[in-house]
View 1 (cartoon, helix red, strand yellow):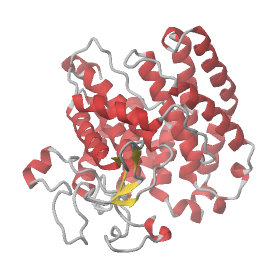
View 2 (cartoon, helix red, strand yellow):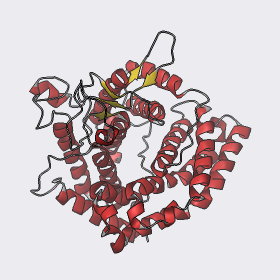
View 3 (cartoon, helix red, strand yellow):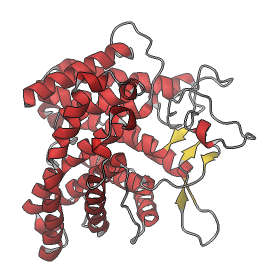
View 4 (cartoon, one colour):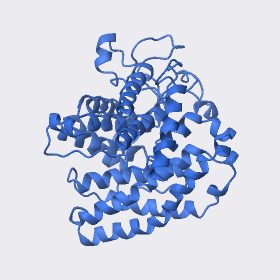
Length: 406
């Protein structure tokens, strides 16, 4: 089954590569940040699964494409060059300094134009949770290659996003976040805070700092950003959600926290306890619904595949907590976490259920699949690789030795 899954993932990613100009001669100028972040991660997973160096080459090339397309102004914009405003040469060395565009088909909303919620979904700008996904892809690329420059670019992106998206609405008020910013990060396009954005920021920044330390450096600015993001997360936030993609996101964020705590890169945080409890509640409620029995036209593959990817982290979390209970708040706390994680293993068969459904020729011939073909294909391939999307770093290795090992 594993070999069959890998072959299917390779086929999906090869087709995606040709279709979007990652390889070959098709136009590569239409990029979408979320899809491309998952593509980089999936290429790295395929390289580890198959040993084929070509997948690493594609990951590196795709990163370059994204930076030169989404790090620059749109073709239909009167502005040109890097969205950071840096010169051509400086932008080449700091491609993430101004953030990265989403890649939506329509230009961003003008400063004086009213908000149209339907149109806004198709308008360009910057999303915080897309930026954090790209940070994760860049950090993994550093871990895979032993080259710290990718993580350094991710860290600069983190600091840019933190400065733009996190705000203090009035003196004495709690810091909040914007969900969507303009391309140049000068104004909010959607000022409301996304449910998981603070969590995305906190976990992503901690992850970047961990990778930095293993490469022998540390951006002091991340310390403040991490502290602020943790305050924005709060201690009594409700993370439960009915959306399968968001449930998968919760599972993924929790798994990264578990990995950081188990490795000793960060102390135990009670936030993890709340996350796991809300993950369990969200899964219970979602699996009691009838969404996974609906026909093609009423389902969105990439949202369900996000859940499938997240479910694959449950076993990894169980093993980490079981192996180092002393790092998870003591015996009672660790036992409580394990109990909840154990209860969630009954949902693991849904990984194969979701994958099998969207692997069928009928599903991939449906309008629901075709409408989001690229993101569906990449996320299905990501799920099929069946690997927890992490590349551990041995803290005793220097960069050169790490490169040889990786």
